[in-house]
Length: 383
Image (cartoon, rainbow, N blue to C red; front, side):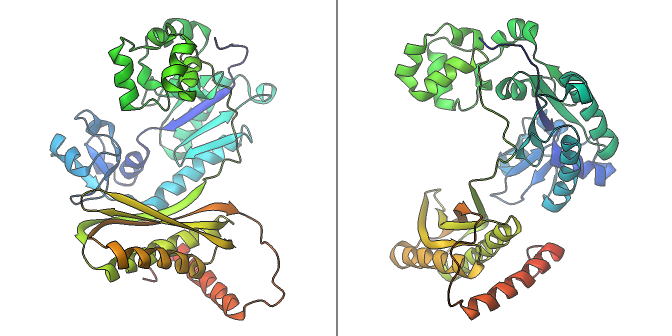
């Protein structure tokens, strides 16, 4: 079982973050069912306010389904830059207490408070202070879980939402944790959940009754993880240098696009965004992948590895264009979604060229100018 020598890991999860920001900016939305996301037949809910959740609305749900469940819901489009402004304020608060902050998303993070007790007090005290400061400085609320490891901290932060503070100490672990549903375990998908339910396993306590051998035989490496997590065991560290393994951009169309040239134009826009984000984060990518989804939801991906890492929109587009044109020439069908992704990052400049390409230097200067425009006016400013 997990050891409770130190309750030093926090998981902070902002409450209905996007919706809460919208209410701050427009108080008339307060107390009303609110859906942040895209409109149209293929729109998806990014965040549902707690008022909308009472009707069964939730994130990652098709907007059409959410509106059938809650016809009176108010729909607002997401405003990424505005959410990032609040996110930066919240993460600044985190950094005042520890350098060990691992972002999970713009509204969620792990904090490791090992060694900070003499400065700031116990982890529960710091958690309460962080919650108080978030509300004072942003007028938003967040829920916090305090535990000896990441799994229990994240699980705890979800138990008393919204605006909760849950401390998973040894007493709570022994009394509450065994009764929690196994759906709280990371990586336990729908089919695995049905498999467990088929053998009468529904709670953490039920899962503990299964041997490690039985779990590993049926689920492989995941089986060993299930065995450990239902006992509260998780040895993963909080990693502040956590970075995304890829940077991508994609777009879902309201109607299937039957014309390859139109789809190609949209793909160029996605590549421009990817290049901008690479340069903004000081990264270079060695692999480019194009994602295409048809009207029947069949999805294909095609990737290409570059000769050297790049953050140049021109180089990224040359690779993406080659992938797209090869596909369009052989098997084009009306497209529902198009996207581009960069991966295999390198933050080094690589070997210096003896005879630099002057045209490439001109393109780089142009890209810097375009980046400045994008930074100030948004992604549609130069389209």
